[in-house]
Length: 68
Image (cartoon, rainbow, N blue to C red; front, top):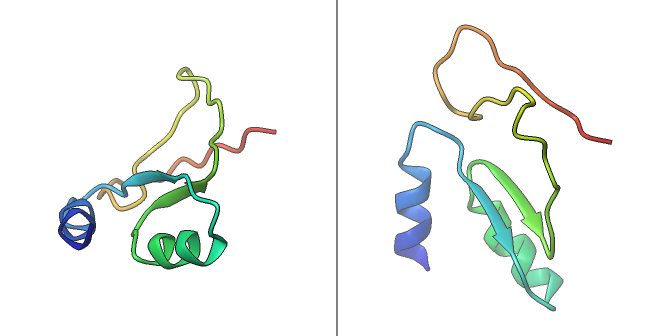
């Protein structure tokens, strides 16, 4: 698991992770190590037509999409 987190965080883009667990403490521990977006026991159904940019990518502007 540690090697996987180091690999994911080495990218210039913000990784996205989904953690499935019954242990909230484990979820928070793992999520704290990810330099990106983390979903716990689920995720959002995002429309692929909506704009989105990697969190860590070097771009001139960032687009943040909020789905309600």
